[in-house]
Length: 189
Image (cartoon, rainbow, N blue to C red; front, top):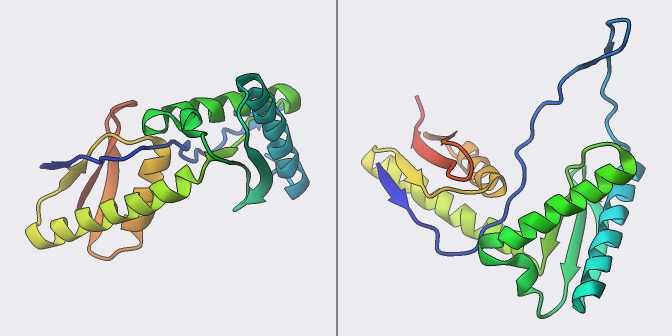
């Protein structure tokens, strides 16, 4: 199998997992209530407040936008000189996202699917990963051999899976254990 190295920064987003059914004291299953648009916006406000406090402590300037996009809270930090908040391969951004999710959990008591972006890092990375996925799919179609991509974060893997799933003749599968979890692209049956 061929291994492909990605030369640019990465970022992580947790893969969607089905919530486990909770049971009440009398054994009946409780329905999981999907958060409302207002609940999701409140989560983005909590995260924005947390990030704003952090920026103040670090003496960084940045504009913070909070919103709801595709059914999840989103906070974007825009400004110059914020690369330290992204870090190598997005590792610092990922840590800040997790800390922001903990701040939300602390105030709401519910886990959050918050997405944090700094300086447009995620959009840029998504474009790069689209090219990587298309390149891997073309090699699989041309040569027939599966292609193993370098280890990726959950965010990166989801981006690649989305591109591969939209293509005919190829399929993708994640293998391995974090932090070495990677995607294998192969011909579909």
